[in-house]
Length: 242
Length: 242
DNA sequence: CGTCTCATTGAGCTATATCAACATCCGTGG
DNA sequence: CCACGGATGTTGATATAGCTCAATGAGACG
Image (cartoon, rainbow over all chains, first blue to last red; front, side, top):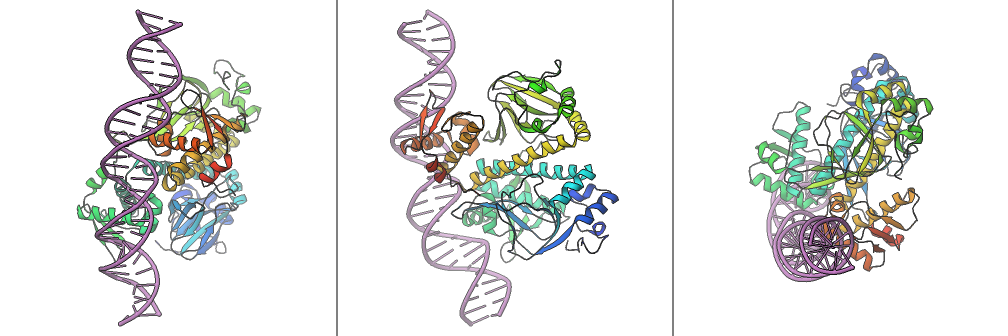
C-alpha cells in the first residue's frame, strides 16, 4: 500500500502509481494519463500538518497516494466535526468553488498527487473522461455525506458506531484484508468527531459491542477490531439493503 | 414565482421559463437551451405525491419550476431525515449513479422539468457548459450537505433552529422578499426531520427565540417569521463568516 | 522506571426525547 | 353563519441518552 507515487520530474510514473486503479485515474487511457501526468506534482505531509484551512482559496485538487487525511469543519468555540477521511485513491477538490468549505489535515504521514486548478480545467476541456471521472467521485462523496446526515440526525450512538465499524470493515475488504478483521484508522477522539459523539461515548459503545460478543478488540489502543457477528452489527446499525 | 414552465409540445418555452435564470439553465446560450428544450418534458405532482423512492432506478434528472419537494432518507423503523428541500430552480439528478439514495416527495403541488438520463448524457457530450453547470450544482449541494453535517453533529437545538431561520431568510432575500420577513416552507414536523429534532423541540426553540425578541411569529401556524434581531440569531447560530 | 498519550470506567448532570394535555386554525356540513 | 372535527402547533411533566467531569488503566517511549 505504500509504493512510490507519480513524480513530476520523473515522467512515466503515473502508470506505476499505487492508486492508479482507484478513483479519478482508474478510467483514463494512456494518452489521458500522459497529459495528466504532465500537470501533476507530488506533495508530502507529515502527520498533523494542515493541507488547507476552511476559507482558503482552492488552488489545486489532490489525489491521495498514501497516508490518511481528515476533512473537517469547526465552530468558533472549537467543536469540530469530521466530514470525511481521505485515503489512498481518494480525490479532493472543488473545480468551481473558490473558497474551501473545510480544513484538511494529515492524520498520518501522507503523499499527495496535486493538480493545480487551471491545469485540471484544461484537462477537463481536453479529456471529457477526466471530467466525468471527477463527477463520479463527487456523486459518491455526496452520497456518503447523505448517509452521514442520516446517521447524525437520526441514529443512536450504538447505531452510529456499529454502522461505522461495518463501513470500515467494507473498506478493509475492498483493500483485500481478511473478511473479519480491520484496523481503525482513527483514534476514539476522531471517531467521536466523525460520528458526532464524545470520546467516552464511543468507548462505551465499543465496550458494549465487545461485551455482547459482536466484536473483539485487539492492539494496544484497541485499534484493531475483529468482527465476530456482522449480522448483529448490521441489525444494530439499522442496515437496510436494496 | 408561479409562472408557467417549459412544455415539450410547445417549443420556445425555455426562454420564458420562470427559473431560466437559476441553476443549471442560467449559463446556457440560445443554442444550448434549444437543444435542452428538445430533450425535456414537464411533470406535475400534487402535494404529498412521491417522485421517486430510495433504491429506484435513476431514470431522469429534474429541475423544479414551481412548488417544493423534500428529499429524505428513512430508517427501517420509520425515523426519517430530510436531506434537502427542492425549490424552483433547483436541480436534482445523479448522472452516474443507477439507484437513488433517497426518496423525493412533493411538499406542495409542483411542476418539474424532466430530462431523461440518456438525453442528459447526450447534452453533456454536445455542450460542455451543461456538464459544467451540473457540476457547479453538485458542488453546491455537497457544500450544503457538509454544513448540515456540522449542524447535526455538533450544534445544539437552538443553534440549529437559529441557523435554519437565517438560511431561510437568506433564501427569501435572494427571492427579493423584504429583508426581515419570511415564510417557512415546512411545518414543524418537517423542520424537525431536517434538523434532527422533534416537533416539540423545534416549537420550544421557536418560542424561546420569540421570547428573547429575536423573532416574531405570525400566521395561523406560526409559519411566518419576522426577524427582529438578525445579529442575535447569528450569534446563536455560531456563525463564522470568512 | 517515570512520563505521556490514549482508552476505559464511573458518577452525576443536562439537553432533548417522550408522553400527554391543550390551544388554535381551518375546512366542512348542517 | 355556526358547530364540529381534524390537523397542526404549543406547553408541561417526566424520562433518558449522551455529555461532563474525574479517576484509573495500559501501552509506548525515552
